[in-house]
Image 1 (spheres, protein in one colour):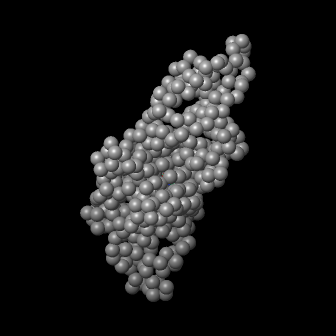
Image 2: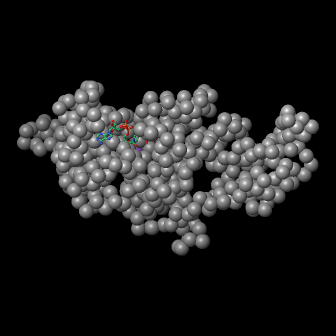
Image 3: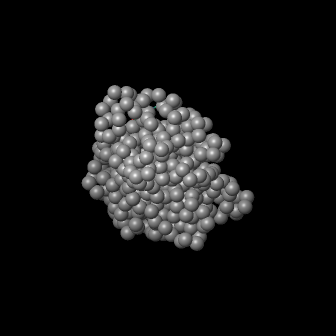
Length: 448
Ligand SMILES: NC(=O)C1=CN([C@@H]2O[C@H](COP(=O)(O)OP(=O)(O)OC[C@H]3O[C@@H](n4cnc5c(N)ncnc54)[C@H](O)[C@@H]3O)[C@@H](O)[C@H]2O)C=CC1
Ligand SMILES: N[C@@H](CC=O)C(=O)O
Ligand code: NA
């Protein structure tokens, strides 16, 4: 290591854009682990500047020389070999990354929103300028997931990627399930712990998970998938009745990202991609049910490898910085010894299938009149849409005080797997039946 400290060894210049939750951890760890990083890269890394929005704030926890903080990010990216973008959002992050490429810098980013919106543009610019674009932190934080998909599984045929990829919503659902915490209170806690996006709407409405699902599907299926291609439902519509219904079924509600290749005869070539993010009930015995707090877990199913599971911290400053720094070492090494990491791979160019074709199962709770023939009417609605019922549970409810003479019952139905369009049409038909007083909970079911 001593020769690396010699004044003759030219350090690699690192510029950091953003000094929030992730940026602060990156800056501190770059300083604390400077010697190890130098040894792993083969040359010292020198932080040449940290772009911030507001100068003069106390950032002593980074251990970085205060003179390195600058509000001129545009200039900073022209003075670096490696640019780390942890500002987030679309602009100015996109322009700064493109400018960094133009000046010959490789870029490490954690910005899934930008990658899901404009990944192809960034890949192309990186390729044109012979530099790297790495983004392991963008999906599932610390968990090494993108490199396995991009590199380790490059010789296999990935069929499915399914998991929990948003720490904030997992934290919220977990707190609602285990402590009975309210939605707003749990979101606030997730913000305080540094898990949530700058605007937590991106988390709770499922945009963050959708961006990650788009990135995962693109890599897994060698096709272009953008955030807009992903069917998305967040957790804001998950009610206490849903959580209760899940508990009654010995299930738990999780926000899942599901990316699948389906062999669909209606599509040219017979294959298509289905990508969706939505809350789903999963049995408490399923491994994903045990994923607590802000942890993430992702299953990958590949033809030859079989099933793989990735688990770890998906959010938070230090865990995310771990993934960022791993990428910094990789791209910095390329600067030292030559070579580039993998670029965009879209040769399969598979079409995106509409959500209606996704195969899923539904759990439906109905508040019905307790009269002869009700069950037959309900069953007919399922049969008419070619949806097969797996289980039905009926329970008497106390009468509605407004109509005390009418009997009431709750019907809880779980279906077999069917196209989402047929399931959703069945729910619409059920809601129209005069004997159905209310559809009290509808949720997709995943896992056996
Ligand atoms: N917090 C987390 O757990 C994770 C975050 N990420 C991603 O990392 C990125 C950063 O996230 P956080 O650090 O949590 O956000 P943050 O909001 O804590 O930090 C962003 C920082 O960038 C600064 N900034 C904004 N515009 C700027 C500009 N023009 N020039 C200089 N600085 C500017 C803000 O003032 C803020 O300090 C985002 O893309 C996020 O999606 C990825 C994985 C996990
Ligand atoms: N807001 C995100 C942070 C990591 O990507 C999350 O909660 O998972
Ligand atoms: Na990751």
